[in-house]
Each structure stands twice: as C-alpha cells, then as structure tokens.
Length: 299
Ligand code: PMV
Image (cartoon, rainbow, N blue to C red; front, side, top):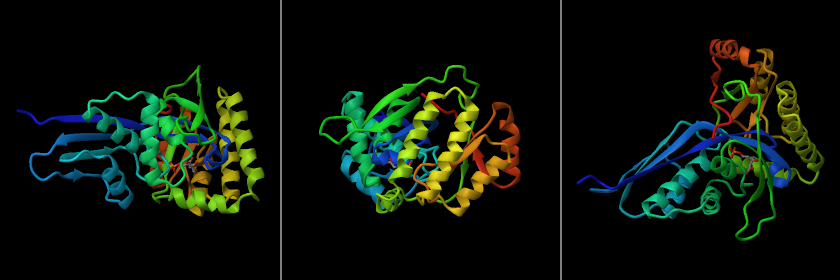
C-alpha cells in the first residue's frame, strides 16, 4: 500500500513600490512572481525526517507550531531565501495549505490568510500583511494596511490590470545582491527613525498612488521606481552594494531600479523596455551579476 502524502505550493512576491512605508499605513504596489515554494507531507514509515532547504531556528519554531505528528516533510523552493522575494510568506502559505489538505480541511481564502500570516509572524516580528496577501491573491495588487482587528484582514486590496501587456507581463529583472536581508532588523531600524522620517514615508505612499494612476506607462513606472529607491536610501535601508546594483542596471539601460523587500541586502528589481531584456541579461552575465527574469506578475 502506498504511503499517504499531500503536496501544496505557493508563489513568491515582489514589491514594486512602497515597502517599509506600507508597515506604517501607506499603500504598496506588489505582485506574485512565478517562483514557488513546494511542500510535501507524507506519512513516516520509520523515524520522521525533515528535508529542508535551510536549517533555521525560526523555521524550526514555525514547524513545531504547525506540523502534524509522525510525518516526513519535504520543502523545495525556487525562491532565493531571505532576499526580499517573500520566501517566508510563500513557505508559510504552502505549509498552511499542505497541513489543511493533510487534515482534510478546505479553508476559505480568509482562513488561509489568517493562518499563513500567523505563521509568517514567526519569521518577522510585525509583518504588514502585504507578502501573505499577495502570495495568496496572485496578480498585481495595491495593498494598504488596515487597523489590526480580530477576524478582519490585514489590509485592503485592489487588483490592478496591466492591459496592453508585453510578454512577459512586465519586463522586470531581479538582480540578487547575494546578501540576505534581515526583515525584522530593517523594520526596527525604520521604526527607530520615526517620526522624523514620516514625511518621506508619506512621499513614498503618494508615489505609489501616482504610479498606479499611470500603471500602463512603463517609462513612468521606471521613474517611480528610481525615485522610490532614493527615498529608501534616505530612510536607511539601502546599502552600497544595492546602490551599485541600481547604478549598474540604469547604466545598462533600465528604465528604473530599486531594492525590493526589506533591504539591507536582498534583491534589486530593474524595469526594462521588453526589447532590451536579452541584451541586459547578457550584460549582467558578463559583469558577474546574478540576474533572472521570472514571470511577473504571476497568478
Ligand atoms: O523582505 P520581505 O520580503 O520580507 O519584505 C518586507 C516588506 C516590508 O515592507 C519591509 C515589511 C512588511 O511586512 O511589509
């Protein structure tokens, strides 16, 4: 007889505009990216084992909370871990989905969101909810945090349409700094600089809504991204390496570039004219910059 097993997955995310400010009530623009975390839970025949991409105390804690007894667990991730691409939200949702399947439950989206957000809280102290909402909802979303209230969702969501899209939907390249960023530490750093930096956080929020108003204009979006990077530098979450990657991207023809996620390491995203994508990737390769062009936004 074959062993009982269930599998589930969830995508990662990229924040186009608005990280950090979103923690403090400003809107953000973010979407799901076609890189996934896959989770398999199976009945253990002997001693249960964990087959994980990393060993991490926070992951151990999350698993202790959620994993059923006497099962083997396999986790595979296409996402670079701890680089601001939503690996923890993606893992949390994939785990919550797999455990629900294992328990024979069919939770609705609101329940899945609540459970995955709770699990994501093990990884970050004070998640805004943008990551969990985007990996669950897919597509491209405007997210604005709501006052925390029991039973209510973490934020208000509006789905955005990119109508006359080139293929891939947005010609976006992800440049990996190779350095992990610590989201909790970066969020705490920003918190410590408030209220002095609140006018910058408000400018970030206004920039998000201006970009959304002209979302079909790829050149304008690139300019919004570079302006946003300037503000992220001002609030202290960029690094010299990230600044150098943004300069590389703009020098190689990007319409705009910025860090994505918490910063302090992580990834840079660069927006291109679709026809410039192959030459840009070749240039990155030659310069030894790790670059990928995943489908974004993904469903
Ligand atoms: O680095 P990531 O993928 O966890 O993104 C964090 C985004 C922040 O705005 C910095 C934090 C949050 O919870 O919204």
